[in-house]
Length: 408
Image (cartoon, rainbow, N blue to C red; front, side, top):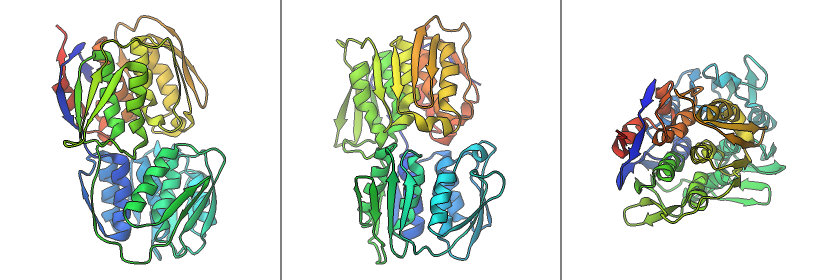
């Protein structure tokens, strides 16, 4: 249980955030496949550590616990390990997270994969083989990590891979981030309309040093602190031309909360600077289809400021570490915010006084813990199961100590 006293935000503090989990996990798969990558500023998240450990093991059973990215990326990775049988399993919650669309795509490419418990869910028994088929249809509205999982192995396939996305694409920015990384390593690809093509890479790739940009989704929590505390915060190491979809947080928080992002290219640093003359909007209406992972942060910020909100494009949130829309609905009540939600949306209905004693449940979801933490600038609260932040940002609570002072 983490107690957060009612606090004030200190001015001009600097935080160094670890490398992006999303980028780090992609690079680890590519490093294992192509052996030509030297990675700097690797994420120190639990998810990345679990993936790195799994890739170094030569056992039949691989347990990735709560690491959803690792489950998805390794499903494709082990599918092309010719002659190797792998049982890929995880935590109780992981066994409730659907993976059927990815498995079906791999099966259509000729891979032999078996569900060991429930149809459509881990654990999986994967018999690695050589893939020669080069075209596959995939629903476009599924998790972008399913598509990225296929893209990461595509260059290793004898004939490359063509993915035809059926329907409206979800989280297009994450797919483009993956393709951008492939391009940097000399793996030719294209994304035209709803068709992605990756050419086979049979030649030896040049060794590349890759310094991982810090994680924009982790930065989002400090945008929330800046929006509520109205003081300047500096974050390292970030780049203006980011490929991370969650870099959209900069534009969103400037538009709706008056937090300007100033880039210092020489120091790879960003400054979050509140606009002292900013007038808050009467309502926030936003489609977050391309950056759903920062929706929790935005909803808590809006709730704290009592700004009505209507957020759409959130279809993937119901199959994350928890049902994030249901979790948000339940926990925002404790902040005095009543909401209603569908499979794709969440919107505020009314604002009331917060509970006297606020105990935020995390539902084994790291983003629930961190998204609600900035509310301590409004009122004291408790975060249950605070260690859940290790999944993506192990130093989060320590970093908060450097920017907050108790409001005596």
